[in-house]
Length: 492
Image 1 (cartoon, one colour):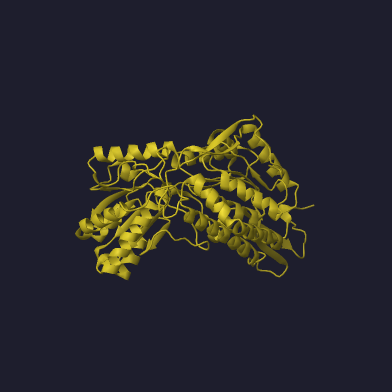
Image 2 (tube, rainbow, N blue to C red):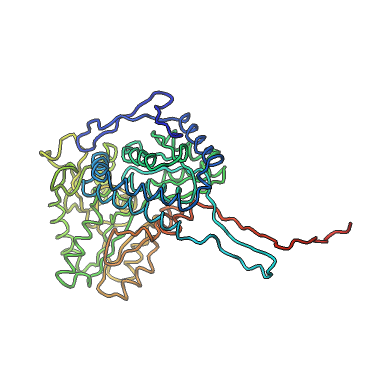
């Protein structure tokens, strides 16, 4: 923090484990409330007294571009770090680095291309009235364990582009790629105090950031329970709050999407991708397959056949398609969800257990087989709650209205997809879904230029796109009277 790497004030440390074998991957400082206060103080000084908020936009954008270049320079090293820390495959790690690079480049170009302000017509040539954007101030950025580098970039890049200073707290489970990113920011020339990092647990570090009087904005990505606590802690200070709290996302497949061999194959392949990429540890995972009854059995049978062929193992091994869960705690949660589903009447089509150890799957790793649960219904916990694991539930429908009702029957509203060979129907259904992102005949792509957010309990606020930058700004109206004169409201 404040341009200097330092140990935690308490001297405490934490082991970061490799989820593929549960061995120690790294040891990092375990920050506490004292470290958090010091980091916020550094960010506060850098904002109130430092040059960054007043640095010309072109210079801020140039720094973001330098960071993008450094990310590509270190692409393989960062991808390996992300793979070993989170368990995802090395190829997924490379894609993450490329997406992070694009995010930094996008916000650099966005902020440079903006107008100086929006002129407001005051109705007289004697007044110049303009609305301008200004940085919010000190931003507390709290990121999740599943996409640590990507989620950090979605917050750090727009904050820096807007002229803010920040304190970032990565998940204590997967902090390593964020540490690397902070080193690149320093190398790119970020002034001391503008960017600060505190590694440690949500309580006390995240909790202290959310309530801290020196923080102006809190951006949190994570679970619903933690997000609710963040919002409650930020409320007394009336801070700006952005929350992305996950989802329980429907993947709606109509029979006409499977009318041809190619269409059927594509829909099945994308259903696998939707549910099982990164072992299902994705907030936008298509964990609910909602399939038209007439093609249900054929579709699910093929889906289960292919799911059993997914190559499970250490993410850095060649040929591996799916890695372990991130922790023993997450493995326990997934096992509990599957057990409860079977007790409630679900039909196990594949998976439902840990795999046998192999040369690419150490026995001590947190591996779990891709699991498909058929004959599910909305009263089941596994259908209602975010499982964040390699679990796909199957529900069926007969009519379009029933499909929409099932898809919207969730307290979340982050993402979803519609598959149909009828363009009009696909667009009609997409328009009726209450989810922040809806894909038609696709799953999981996102664009930096678009906006990411959700309805319902999936959170508030937007990341990426123009609104992603707007989250980190305040607006100011400047009214300039070019010919001031006495008001003469009162005598004397």
